[in-house]
Length: 197
Length: 213
Image (cartoon, rainbow over all chains, first blue to last red; front, side, top):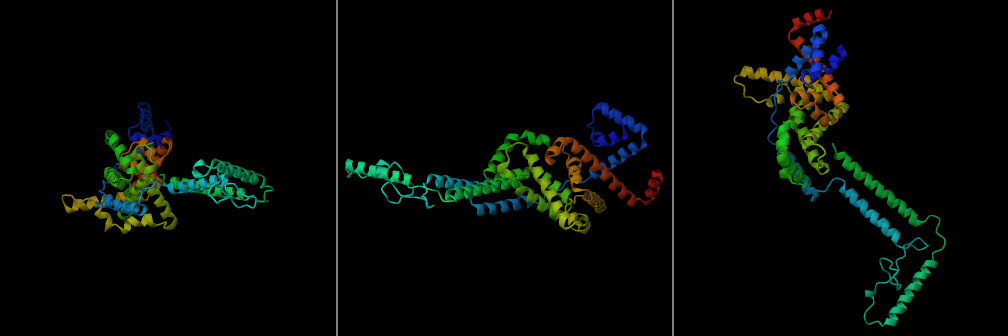
């Protein structure tokens, strides 16, 4: 064993963790090298000296202080949310918005078209009207007529969508919403990362 | 210490799960189990009682907040000590940035006041108690002079008695890194210890200097 190797294995030697073979090599080196012998002895004394440090008793109010802070936090949050959950939920909401925006038909002028099968304003466009919306009093002819009308409206809508504007509003909205989702997810990730030790 | 933990792994797992659901009583039990070691580590790292209490509190708060992310990939105790060690090291880094001399000055300023309160006063006579207090103060002053990373290794190994494997897991370093860091820490400790000894017994200086020549 060289002096360098002795310095490198000194911690393990003092902690009696060296395998027998290396321990013997270490001790053989000490017999011939006064400096390593001196360093080993001095290090051993220093470690033994520092080991006299006494165990400390934590202050009695340590735990109660932690608990009261946590209780306050809990009351402020009401529910104990997982870290980053708020951001993830916000991202999910924006994602729903993004999907909804794409399912919703857009008129050529860039405003979402929200007209129902019979011309009345509805929230979403149903190209095939649900049957239960017709009152029972209506005759079958009326039903068929109305259904035909809606088919015409739908057909008109198909043809009435000619040249797209230069900046498709749908594209712009999609880009903005996607960016927002990415930012929110990055925030959630950062928040979770920040909590990790 | 290790035996104690592995003897009750199931109970601890249940406690951890209850904490993850936000159960503060369960967290109190976990804190009770580990507060001594966490507090001891924070004290060795900070060197003064006020900061120690703050650091230990901060470590437990961080642990509770991060518990939903604890998936049992490590032992809970290792994970907790890692949070405590990082909390202390982060604090040291902040201190170094803004108040470079504080860590060296602090133990001296608390010499007669706060530090002494920490040491249990159950010595049989006043003289023994004074000698004991003086020794404890010297040890802590010397530890404070080590670089924080070395101080952490030394405290975990020589004061808290963790195994090399445990320390490597707590500090998230490779075994080789840990061994060389421990060797460096003990070498620094040795130099500081010898300096201190020389100051106490001036005649030794001459002898040692002669020996070096």
